[in-house]
Amino acid sequence: MGKFHEIPNVYVGEVDIKVKNLDDALAFYQQIIGFQVLEKTDRKAVLTTNGKTALVTLEQPEDVIPKAGRTTGLYHFAILLPTRADLSVFLRHLLQTGYPLGAADHYVSEALYITDPDGNGIEVYWDRPANEWKWKNGKVEMATEQLDGEGILAESDAEWSGLPAGTIMGHIHLHVSDLKKAEEFYTKGLGFDIVSYYPQAEFLSSGGYHHHIAINTWQGAGATTPPENSVGLHWYTIVFPDQVSRDNALNRLQQLGSPIRKEADYYVTSDPSGNQIRLII
Image (cartoon, rainbow, N blue to C red; front, side, top):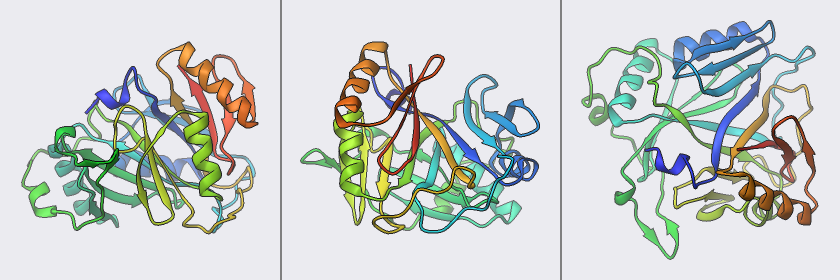
């Protein structure tokens, strides 16, 4: 873990989520997921695992409306734990709380799936060592198989005390309206490589990771962009190793006709399905 989410790679750093009720959401993200609060105001909370790095921000828009069906946006964001033992502790915690969960073995990783009170999807996973991943013709072998829950639980009997400090944002998986247009944006624009295909979905990464970003049309081709005040994804960050690599990406996005806006120390763009991205260094 780690080398795929640091220089010289390009990766996802933070996710900002709109919620219906900040207090309810915060209780879930602290008590069920195990985040710590880094900063908080009446309508916003910044969450961390190490006391200094923001991983998830929760926002409650003034005129917020519930998540609509069959729209683009977040499928899930994925929190990457340092070890299988950490996943063991988290799984036992979920079982003890009785919170509903899904689970899968993806060959490259073992994952748990839960949904926050607003319907935002969350994956919590650990990566098997990269030298155990199988590649063929530049594509990594992934699947959705039954998780060895008993084997994971046997890894550790440590007591749950929240997410470990080494936890990072592993990847983000997005609903898009047009797979080919989204593919062009993420490959030709942002420079990611396609590393795997799945029915109506693609997985993209930099530096040989199994995926930093996934895109799908599981909400239907032509799915609409949700209203600005809808619960769901507000924005996420893509971290570049240096100014040159970000400038190169901005030039490519400009050639594609993608929207670009300069903010204080970052740029804002959106993929063709309206998923907003902050490009940071």
